[in-house]
Length: 143
Image 1 (cartoon, one colour):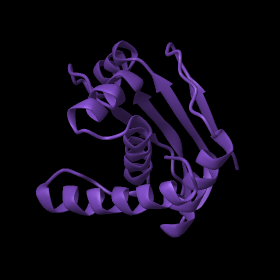
Image 2 (tube, helix red, strand yellow; image 1 turned 90 degrees about the vertical axis):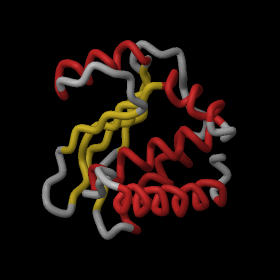
Image 3 (cartoon, rainbow, N blue to C red; image 1 turned 135 degrees about the horizontal axis):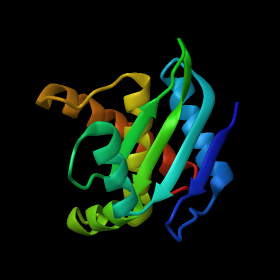
């Protein structure tokens, strides 16, 4: 099943869509799951804020929102990412833009897989997973 990568209201298209899709598949399979229909959508702060308010009743900017449609072992869902937040985060943390972008993509997919970042212990586990998969992205020449 495919991974769809698209933009909504943001003038952005990541380079290397094929490599990015392969990396996403690697992450999913390495975690013991199968790839289903997964959309990665790049958008603006304002659009993601509207989704955050509409679906999660939260009135603040965020870098990613995930909608989990997983069925059993098949990972399906929407990972919606604010390119504005990725740019700001990359500058704030002194991280390259594409590395931060891949971190946020991994973060969203890990949420669909079932990881949570609701406390310090889980945040640390999630950060370690993100870093592991970022190293794999570097290997594939994505970042």
